[in-house]
Each structure stands twice: as structure tokens, then as C-alpha cells.
Image (cartoon, rainbow, N blue to C red):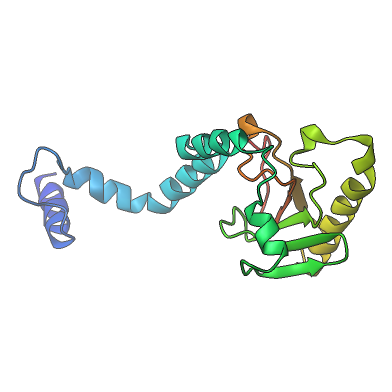
Length: 186
């Protein structure tokens, strides 16, 4: 047992696990070695947990965005539509624009937005007059899934309101795919 412990300590020193004592950064060489063996499992677990829960920053951003939701000010999506801000366009027609999300949550993560907001800042504000564009957005999502090669399995997500962490008040659909989706989504 002593030889095994000595071997572990030598390994820990070799990989830099031992350092001068710092009470703010205590290191346990046995824990570090153990964690290296389980690194991929821990990363997957951490990623799964973090992808399910909204961070405090996301919640704060959503609440801040909600306070400005009905001001009529141009959103970042309005600027993308007018080509003031560049984007990676996946699909476009006369009514909708689909482009890659800059913070993807899956190998394929495309946003589909109506080109004309027409008061449709969130799904919870939809009216009967929006039925055509809502259907068109869903159909465009299917076209995006085909173009991206994920038609056999994809998810469409619409965040509506601050408690759903909506951060841009211009209705938009997230088309996600390219990996196994989990249930419940979050």
C-alpha cells in the first residue's frame, strides 16, 4: 500500500498537482488524480446540468429585456434583418429569416424570425391576425431542419416571457438538433 501511495504522489508531483500551500487554493493530489480519470464523465454531467438550468445572468438579462419589450425600439433581430449586423443566414424568404445562433446549445442551432414584428414580441402576445405568420415560422423551421440534415430528429423551442428566459422581444423559434435531445427539456 505504501508503494502505491508513493507512486500516486510521484504521479501527482509529475502532473503538477502539488504546489506550495495556499489556503485559498488547497489541492488534494489524490482527488486530482481521481478526477482526471473521471474528467469526461464529470464534464458531461456538468454540461447536462448547466444546459438544463438557466444561470442567474440569463435570468437577469431576460428580466432587463422584458422592461424594454414594448417600447418599439429596434431589436438586435431588426438589425440582422436590415443587414446592419452580419449573420450566417441558413434560409430566407419574403416573410422569415433563419440564421445561426451565436451561442449554440446544440450542433445545429438556428433562429427563425419573422421579418415583420407586427407586435409579435413573444408568443404570449399572439393574436388571431398572427396565425399565418406563426404557421409560416413552423414550416420554415421544417425547411431549416431539412437543409441542416436533422429532419429525422430536431426540436423547436419558443421562449415566451422573462420566466422562460426570453432575452430578445421579437418572436423567434430555436431549431435545435444534431445531438440526442433529452426530456424534460428544462
